Length: 136
Image (cartoon, rainbow, N blue to C red; front, side, top):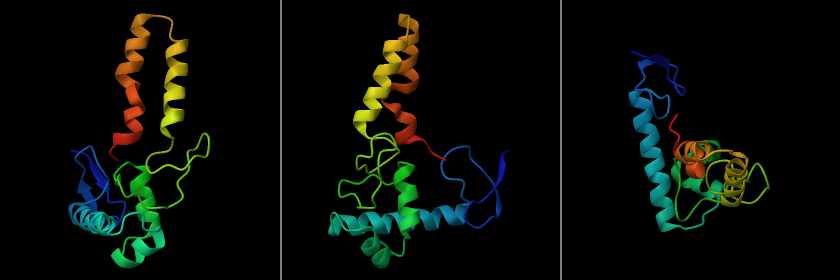
């Protein structure tokens, strides 16, 4: 058993080992809030962060965290001003833009000396999935 403190309310709970480190009650509230944000974006594509926050009750900080964690990926992404940490391009999820991800991956592939190393890079870093799909 893996007991943790909830990141939102500090209550001790049995952590499942994946996803946000939230207790059951906070996770439910978080998911309901995220659903409200996604529904609002469906009706108001490209809305600014402050507007979405005002209409849904989700703070800009919470929405930014969801986007960085890859949990809030929406075709009508919120304009929160996320920037690629490498080149500064505007992004809607994670920490790097697609071009920088591809560049870093290519650098690793070029540095790999054997077919086994290249396969390992593809298997473990293929598309930098850990930035897109990592659950905390």
